[in-house]
Length: 151
Image 1: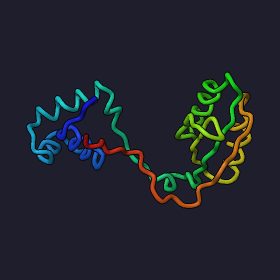
Image 2: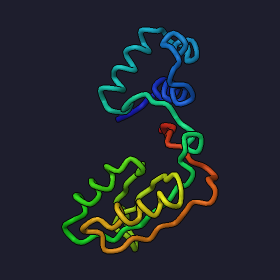
Image 3: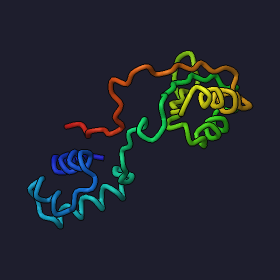
């Protein structure tokens, strides 16, 4: 899908403040409010905009540790294992990857005891051959918002 300059500016403003009104968007971008309505509807229908959400500070709500886990998964079990792991509320990302592991999992836990539970219950599901967990010591950058490239 080809995004024009207006689409990119619209998305950039929404990434800063998803609560901004359509009128506010129109003023910031310099187009008519009807244009904003039509662009938003089109971007939503095309799946460019998947939803509007709140960004939380994990530590402020009790998630004190972030972990990154590499998994080796038995051949033929990948989809089922990944779906089961993704269902755990502590897990916020599951990826198929290349390299030494088949899947990488990002999760947040409340304590060492919670990490122990995650490791012993989720990362030992049937089909997981091996797991390798690393605890994040410091987050330098973490931002799921992606600015559309200029083409």
